[in-house]
Amino acid sequence: MSAAAGPKLAPYTLVWKHEAAEDIWDICLETEGELVQGLKPGMFVNVAVPGDPSHILRIPLSFYRTDPVRGWICMIVAAVGEGTRRLCSLEPGEGSTLLAPLGHGWRMPQEGAKRALLVAGGVGAPPVFAAARMLQARGIDCDVVMGAKSERFLWKEGAQALSGNDGGAGYESALSRGGFCEVFLATDDGSYGYHGFTTGLAEELVGKHSYDVVMTCGPQPMMAGVAKVAAAAHIPCQVSMERMMTCGFGACNTCSVQMADGTVRACCQDGPVFDAEEVLWK
Ligand SMILES: Cc1cc2nc3c(=O)[nH]c(=O)nc-3n(C[C@H](O)[C@H](O)[C@H](O)COP(=O)(O)OP(=O)(O)OC[C@H]3O[C@@H](n4cnc5c(N)ncnc54)[C@H](O)[C@@H]3O)c2cc1C
Ligand code: FES
Image 1 (cartoon, rainbow, N blue to C red):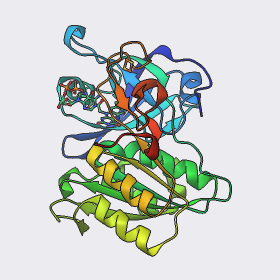
Image 2: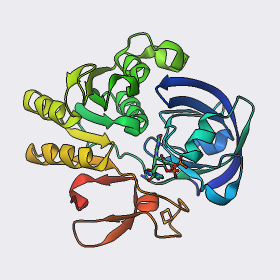
Image 3: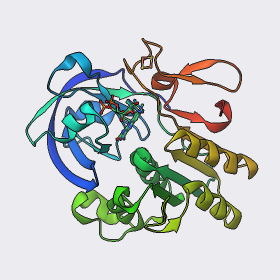
């Protein structure tokens, strides 16, 4: 899958925000509808934040839903450093510019696929959420594993929206159709749901059900583990990789991903979604 049009720089305004978990914000940015139209699940946007531009690059961010009619891009952002903290502290009406659409998103599984296993760790959840909605639109059932270090970092509203329960304050009408996924929550410390890593839960599910595809986004060690589980069960697996990014469009070589065949690919341009078997996991 490739972007319908090249990336475009456009102004945005923050139109909505809500703290979805500790230091994790659910925010919607409004920009040009045509640009939003070009964003496919698994792609990303590069967001500038107001303030001193000298030490903050644009921030690469995934999204969990888009609304081309209103020009909205909605995302889950962990405030981990100065740039993300500035973005999450914007008030409605404030904004800057963003560059999008960027990267290559999820690929639709092979014809006839019936059931998918999606695995999200931490703020890997937004693109996995977008993948679930993409698959649901094609009639593919999804089991979704969502994990976090602890309950306070879990995006529970995302899980609720996927499983069809009350979406809570973080969601709008488009999600009310809900109920299309079986969602399994995991925490590393056992404070909520399954006690352990998402990989353990994924392995249990793969042992019980037949999946046609696995899609995952989260910390690299988690994705390496999920890729291993999928490979052992001979299930095609797509991974959405994260790298430090400077330009976001293939011009700076800061986002290299080592491939199993010895080549190096640009995460921003050739990814962020890759076939797991193409990647050199180390
Ligand atoms: C394709 C892509 C999609 C992403 N989607 C999301 C998302 O949906 N939600 C979300 O919260 N975050 C996402 N990230 C990570 C996000 O871009 C970084 O957290 C952000 O750039 C940190 O910027 P900062 O100025 O706040 O922090 P900094 O002060 O620059 O860094 C704070 C910490 O974050 C790490 N970091 C910085 N940049 C990145 C990066 N590009 N990738 C990973 N770690 C980084 C630093 O090493 C440091 O430990 C994504 C990254 C990529 C590459
Ligand atoms: S971020 Fe510049 S080449 Fe990928």
